[in-house]
Length: 161
Length: 116
Image: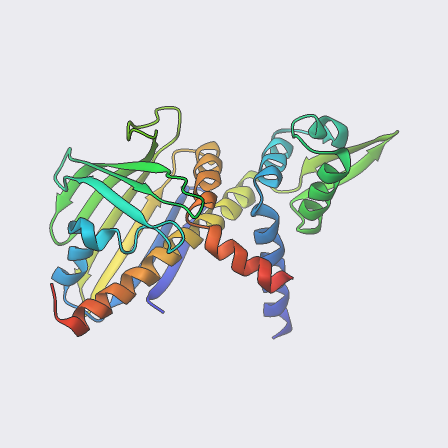
């Protein structure tokens, strides 16, 4: 288990996930910086991600699509707000149409990633996701269910069966 | 631990209830106000009985309550706004849990292979 802690704050509408890796900070940063590494983990095995654009600089645009088991391809984008390699990255994450154009009708969330070096040489990663409203959370989660949660849900269904 | 098992069982029921898009929509409407099952049934391309079944699953997970008024069954959300936000965040957690686990596997894999 890599995940150390998950903290939800329903008043602030934030989710904070903390993890620690037995690896130097540069290697951990590489998984955000290198699109070929990023696409190995962003989508679940049932919805692998392909990053089409990847400009990890302030104001830069990152666009991707995921490919589902039925051939469906939900698209998404990041708008990079700030970068301080290899310590911090902040971006807006939203949905896009089939041609990769951001869907302005869909809500977005803000994601802030902070990496730090532990005295042990390990790297700590903290990811804070902030939602603009409960309605936005409903919509984002409904979309996420299709992709990210599909696998987890079928496992739960098996447990319950 | 019995208490822990109960809590897990409850979480599973909630998780299962929210895994379906129709049930999420029913819950979302029920959080905004009280609706009869027959009103809810008009929103979805399925039978009254099927909608009733979805409501029963939400009820079992203690996300909505049902009361009878004449011939109607009225459904309303059984969560305060904060609790509802918490439920939503718990759903969202799953996405990042998966991502961070895969992230960890790749970091370890890269270290073994020695590539950067």
